[in-house]
Each structure stands twice: as structure tokens, then as C-alpha cells.
Amino acid sequence: MMVRAKDLIKTYRLEGLEVPALRGLSFSVEAGAFIAIMGPSGCGKSTLLNLLGCLDRPTSGTLEIEGVDTSKMNRTDLAILRSRQIGFVFQTFHLLTRATALSNVMLPFVYSDFPKAQRRDRAMKLLRYVGLQDRMRHRPNQMSGGQQQRVAIARSLANDPQLLLADEPTGNLDSRSGLEIMALLERLNREGKTIIMVTHSRELAEHADRIVHLLDGVVLRDEVVAERRSATAQLGEQLA
Image 1 (spheres, one colour):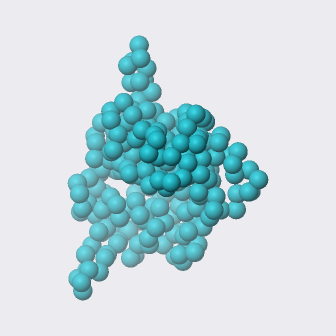
Image 2 (image 1 turned 90 degrees about the vertical axis):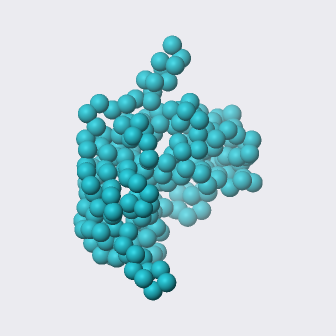
């Protein structure tokens, strides 16, 4: 099992008040799955993603990633786990504006033990993988939104993580670029990556195996997608 969450509770303290974000949430994700998480604003999606990404710890409950209980780890151990096993793809890309695509993809190596002699070759290989072999020297302001998101995906793969967390990965893109990004995520999933994607779009969610619906900090419904959409097929139809 890639992810196993049991009775997760996360409570924030704001100005002396306790504000519950997760209220005993439980769910699991098998290795190699593609999961979409949906729900209204304030339902706990961002909090859950922060916990899954080892950016925070639950107030109580357990969260295992590849058999390791992250709820008992200190910040240093969480950072190590995060850098080695988890990749992040954000809606707003989070690229360094003054750095080239190649430098952005190499950034995660600063916090890893990946061999220095191989870092540049690894970054170039990843940019070729996402179709940006001719944009390696370009900075973000010289690329389209879709190209920037491809750089961000290449960066997320730098340390070869098995779990990818995607937070509204097509939210800032036009429909064509969004389909291309979804096709890339589908390809990564076919090649064995476990993907957990937060989205407000039912249409995007149907590219996943399952849709986990949240409401008020708990799982309202866990739905198996009967017939997955295929961005790859949709792009092919547009070109036909």
C-alpha cells in the first residue's frame, strides 16, 4: 500500500480558537493508482495534501507512506522522506523566475544525495521526457503556461519519487494545454507512478481510477470511476 490514512485529525489554533480541518479522515491508496480528491472549499483538501506531502503532521491519527508512519516523524525525517519519495506539481508552477528550465529541474538535487556527476544529465533527460528538449535554456517568462507546467513536472521527477501530488495541475492552463498535461500524468501513471490529484473539475477527476469526495474534513464518498477519460485519446481525436 502506497498511502494508508487512519482517523486523521488536524486542528489549527487561530487566535485562541481551535479550528478543525480534518475530523477523523481515513482512506488508502494502492501503489500505481491514480486518485482524484474533490470537495468544496474548506473541506480539507489542502490540509490533506499538506499531510500527504509531509509538509505538516496530523494532530492525531496515523498516516503511512510506503509503510512508514509519518505522524511520528520529526521535521528532519519528514524532509528526507519528502525529498526522496514525493514529487509535487502545483497550479502556479512555483518555478524560479530567473533560472532556466534546466536549472529549475536540477533544484531538488540540492536537497538529495543524487550523484553530482549525473545531475545535469538526469535533468536533461527529464526535460526531453516532457517534450522540452528545445527549451532547456529558456526562463519561465520565455515559455507558455503549458511549457512551464511541463518543467514543473520534470522537476517533480528529479529524484524519481514513486508518489506524485498534483494540486489543480491544469488550473492556470487553456483547455489544450490542460489536456497535454493530463496526458503526461496518464503516461506517468501507466509507467508506475502513484498520483494523487486535487481538482474542482469532475471532468478532470474522471481521468483517475477513483474519486475521493471530501466534506467537512471526512471522506463523504469513495467512488470508483467506471470508465476513465483518456486525455491521450482526446488529443488524438483533435489531431485527426
